[in-house]
Each structure stands twice: as structure tokens, then as C-alpha cells.
Length: 295
Figure 1 (tube, helix red, strand yellow):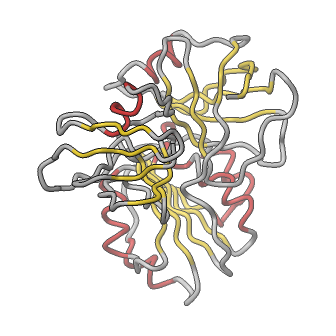
Figure 2 (figure 1 turned 30 degrees about the vertical axis):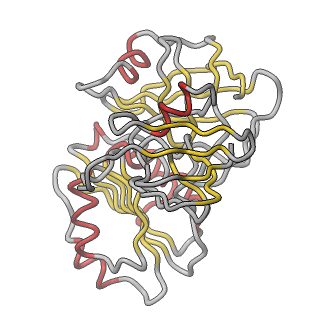
């Protein structure tokens, strides 16, 4: 964890504030566009937010938080109680949504989904375009800032969604599409853009169906211990109860904070990130037989 001081809280749209977090002990850890951090709030909640500032600025991080009317206590606390001067713990950045090299980019943002795309647009160069969708310009964070900086390379669609099929037809043969926003918009993007070009980041996991959960064992290779995992508990909870302090954030398979190594057995991946070979996200993923894990 990194110690930060909340330097300022600024409204950037209706129901959205920007938080600028200054490193309390010197430079903060480096990051690349698409990265996010875990922010530990004073009400004992941890929430994940995309970094939307300048990666070259090692002195501070910027995130933006929308006040969710169905808040489970995170965004509500930020908007109603969090004030400048507060010391906050912030994780090292993680990046499940990296910007790959391409000659041309189309970025598609919906509402607060603009946050991971802001530094991408700055890094991508003159061949990048942004299509930004929201209920109204007043509810779209950083809209005025984007238009002022990028002009015609930014298209705002307030109150309606653009024709994604038409946007797909305009793309060059090697263009990549990066999209972040509400589930309905991402589903429409998946239907319109070729899968090999499209990169998505979701706020919530896609609903999937799996077979019934069954008990299994996790053998912790480095410690020599074997941890039983009951059918009704997650691997994350079983490991934590056994004394292995595995960090966790979303507990939905979208943030990546609970990643562990797998050295034997076949995990059943249930995350929305796409775990690399030899890794798994133990908050949602499990197994039907013994796993050997790197703990």
C-alpha cells in the first residue's frame, strides 16, 4: 500500500467528483493508461477506481467517482464525507486493460467509463478518436476539457447512442477499439465491432452459468499446507480463514486484486478479466478437484 493525502476534491460533472491524491512519502508508483488502484476508504470499504490523470506525474494520482444511487457505501462516503487533507491508503496500480500498439484507435466511453480512456487518448496520438456517450453533457465528466483539448477528434453523443455499425465501417484494417461504460453499451459494441479488435472493461461481471459448486482442496505448495474449500465458500475466503492474507477488492472477478499462482490442477476460471496461464482470481474462480497454488 501507498500512503497518500487527498489534495483536493473537485466536481467534474453532475454527480461526479475528481479526487487528486498526493503521495505522502514521495513519488507514487508508476502506471500506464488503463490501470486502476484500490482506494481504502475511512469507512473500512475498499473500492477500485481507474487512474485518469497523467502517467508522467509521479507526485499524484487522479480518479473520478460517480455518486451511485444504489451505493453500497463507497461512492456515498466519497461524495458526502470525504474531504481534502485526509490520509488514504492506495494500492499499487494494476492494469487489466492495457493500451496495445496500433496505427489507429477508436475509444468509446459511456459516462464514468471515460476515466480509463482519458490517459489512453492522450497517449495514442493524432490517429485516435473518442466517441463519448452520456445522458446529457452536464452528466459527462471532463466533456468540456476533452473538447477544448482534442476538438473534432472527440464526438459527444448526449441523450442517444451512435450507430456502432457505422463506426465499425469507418475503421482502418488495423485499428483497435477500446470501450468502457454500462453493460448495455458494451453488449452493443460486441455486436458491432470484430472481436479481435475490441477491448472492453466492465464495471460489473457478465452473468454466466456454471455447474454446481463442489468441495475441493487447495494445496499450498510453499507452506506445505492443504486448505479444504467447502462448496458454499469461495477459495478466497477459505485461504483467508486459513491465515493466508490474500488481498481482495471487488469480489466479483473484475478487479484482479486477489490473483494467485497455480502450479498444478485445473482451475475453473469465472472471472471477467481473462486470467493468464498459471494464475487465477480466487474470489470467484474455483475447481472441481485439487489445486496446487503458489502460497
